[in-house]
Image (cartoon, rainbow over all chains, first blue to last red; front, side, top):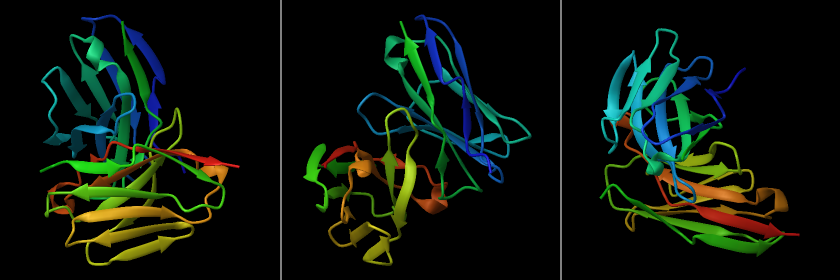
Length: 112
Length: 113
């Protein structure tokens, strides 16, 4: 039973560039949430996708956008990258809108 | 009001000791309180979770104590082992609002042999 799969595992980008991160949810899960975890901090909620729509959004600028596909996989896009966007980006999946999240291992994004 | 405050920031115990990590919250709408364990280079993994209708929950060596009136909850790790060395996060969410998790700042636990 595959867990949450994220790609790529590591990424280095230059300030001002755009990046796309990908997530495949755990088998049987239909909801995907994205979190940003800065070094030494707890994860912070970015947004949540269910039925291909953004259902909730955290306190992140519009440079952060996402998408969910019919197979429940999801993408996180970040435009106009800033140095402060350097973090571990975590994808979490669940069944429906509620509890019981399973997290992936994350994508480590470094902006230089 | 959305914050979850976690303490201590770091903790060192000897093997067999009982580390205790504490969290406090303000939002009385929170109704789900999970604890996550995170190893370097990995995502958080759910350890144990509690809802406000019970005051204690045990799963193996992990126990959550919950004090609804004080708006505090804590994680106890019985008979701690070096393999328990990791960062622990408490979190809280409002289930009916979609389950967005609000995390504490984390506690780095080191269990010495």
